[in-house]
Amino acid sequence: MSNFAKNVRRLRKRKGLTQAELGEMIDVSQVVINNYESEKITPKPTTFVRLAKALGVTCEELVK
Image 1 (cartoon, rainbow, N blue to C red):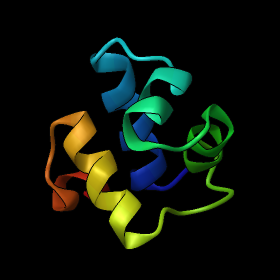
Image 2 (cartoon, one colour):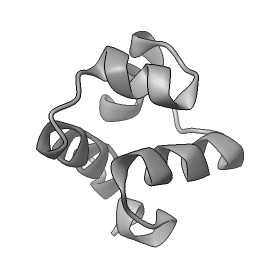
Image 3 (cartoon, helix red, strand yellow):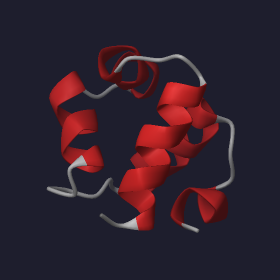
Image 4 (cartoon, rainbow, N blue to C red):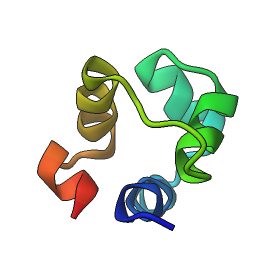
């Protein structure tokens, strides 16, 4: 699993969010969040920025 996928899952759980809740925060579906965490897709740049903000980290921290 990539660092990005691991970090999304870890940070989401740390914030106590479900995939659906995180998806709502960044205007994507629960399925999309699941696909990020499963490495099936990667977010577009604008969605990537929204995801980092929602998780309270920088974009760089999201991929470390």
